[in-house]
Image (cartoon, rainbow over all chains, first blue to last red; front, side, top):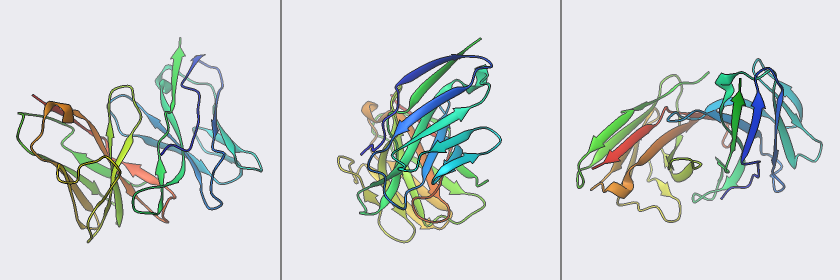
Length: 113
Length: 116
């Protein structure tokens, strides 16, 4: 069901900015783009959501080009505690026949000291 | 933000027994909740959509008689794994939809099920 494509893994060092790009070529007109973070043995945690252009909150920025076929999550100055899996979600048709947010493979970010 | 409570966080049971997992939206009403299953190092797989007051809708390949879902109120959905077997051991996660459909989900903390 996954309608998104992300790099499987990324490595970074503390203090660096990390950009994770997600492709969603078949995004629907009314779909938002939502990013979640997941630590081992925990439920996903909402990071940021956007529809177009740029969105910024206290933890991240989300860049969405005009065609909305991709998006980039930007994490400023990562720390060791940012080591996690990051998922980009858009809508997809599920068994009910309606659209729902579904998970792709995610990006495993490893931050080194 | 919205809070979704899921419990138990961890359960160990014997093969053949049934296990119930609860998912509650604590500060909002959720007409729609979702149940997922996650194996180690893998992504979340949607199992079913739970709608308040109606039958759940299961994704292809998910046995509805094994994974019973009840959504009796706007704040509570339960997943019962019936006659559990070792292959049912997994991490089960629920989410609740707040606001417009397909807009934002809030997740429970997950339940690690181990079937001996």
